Length: 295
Image (cartoon, rainbow, N blue to C red):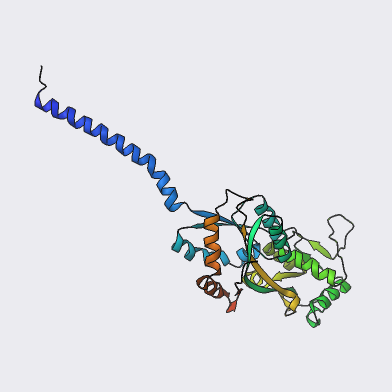
């Protein structure tokens, strides 16, 4: 048998070892993405009302939650009505909205399994400083709306089925007034629908010298107030409760239910509630935590 020279033999051994090492490394690299997904790619999508986003709520609560749990949180901020529709199509893992009747309907339809009170604030009526409808002298929010209607002063409505829009429509109904937008050409010229979120509607109200209903947190965070101010608040009818709703696993089996439940329970915990209470603007607390039992 012909023997290879020693140097060539060592070279062949080393090359064979190197090939085995490369194969092993390749197998490890194939496995690593799966391991990385398990460790770092835990994420949820929250379908949310715009008011929490406008107020900086998620910027305040998400970073410490992600730091503790490794779960990333994405937010789709739309009107409450659209958020509920998105979640009913399984385009999200958790809901944070503020329209209790619609939330209950969502659960009754089998789209959600649990709803919790999370926090609250209130709605306020804002308008031009000169107050042409004399709304600041109203005895109630119903009286204020009737004054606006009688005066013919402009009112900017979101018109987007959001929680704020639903509240506004309920208040007009209680006032026995049913204003219609001018988009059809035959509506009330003083009642203007934007079809937009709260921030955009407030911008429009300021520019058009209109009254508007808004949640207090968005108003406090809103920078373009110009000569607009809060003209009426404090009516119990203006209470604004936010709820957190867990999506049904039976309806949306591919949703990230475990991660969504962890986030929900963290927000409802003592730690989460205390953190919510520290979110302020100009020394004013934006949300009052009031975590309650599941409904």
